[in-house]
Image 1 (tube, one colour):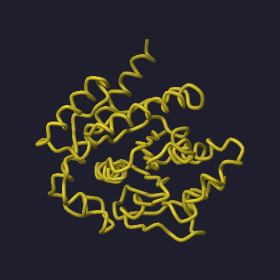
Image 2: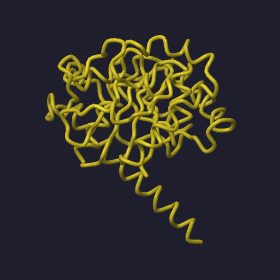
Image 3: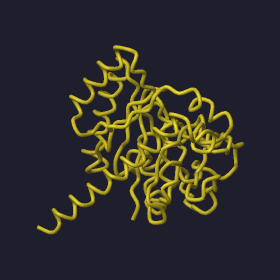
Length: 267
């Protein structure tokens, strides 16, 4: 059974979709079976993998939210052999309004994505930059949350709010939900603020912050316009190296967690 990881941050422009796409691609390059689910109405994760946001009516994550969990109809292949995608389309823009009157509206993604987890090593969910019903569905479906964080003051405020939301969801809807890890993105070591924020985050979230950081990188910014993850656009770039390193660290952490859980079970 694979793990379901929501990639979330209520603040936009922090590298959330970039991290979802490129971590998924890097894990696929490590021959892990990966499904990326685009739950953001902007559809940037879909276009970043060569599947521009489709017209209304095209099979997409919207169908899963509407209770039609036919995975084979909504899953799309990508240019990477081990990476599949459930795309967003135009219907998703109105999904939050439609979900308001639906019974158990926060649970619509859980069953289909748990079914998907039986077929993949990891299911990554790219969420909207908000804490609405789409993000809540992702949090209720997830085993854990990966938080991309830009090294600036306002990002810290957003992280505090997100942490509170994750705690509330874990207490009332999805027991055990917690932060899987925090990824520092768009890092510029020349700025003093970067060092200050990095130090504060590592201090407050000891053990949660990844050692690997993602730098500001022009090639990383260019890749989405070509519908490619950075590995296929420019594998020699600093951005590609960072996400490959992040994937390695991610997998190492997963193995340590499994070993720790096995040790507890054996007692």
